[in-house]
Image (cartoon, rainbow, N blue to C red; front, side, top):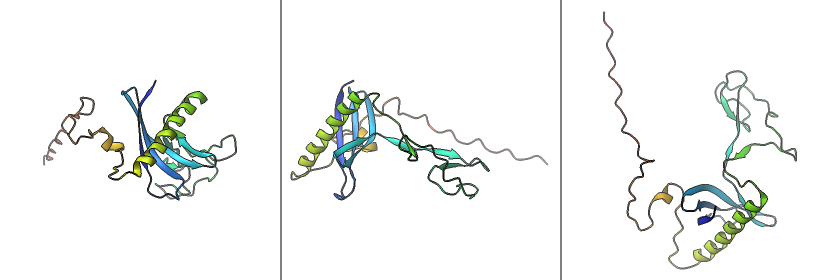
Length: 169
């Protein structure tokens, strides 16, 4: 699959490790959002979109993030060593939602994203610069015309709740 579009939105704080957010479009058909461009010791690198891992409390079965010290439901203390460990012995607290299968694909994708990041930095120095739209704004057309809703995103109207029946006495 070929990357047909890369959108990079720079982060305001230049001292932050997070440099930018990115959205990739593959062949004008498939979008991957929430990639992060992060300052690393060897230059910027790309972190794939991820989610926090959770587990269940042994007492009440409430769902909690692995970093939580107490259960969100019952308040009991949770085992601090309950997270799995990676090959370096660090707690595995996140998992990728989307990621390349092999190193060649990662290098190709990361190279194109980092190149787009530096190009966006140069564009941001121009007068009248407006940052690209990401997230919910990404689906809107840039010309300002409202895009017609796609059939996949059209929701059926909500049905009214049926009236409650009165109890007979």
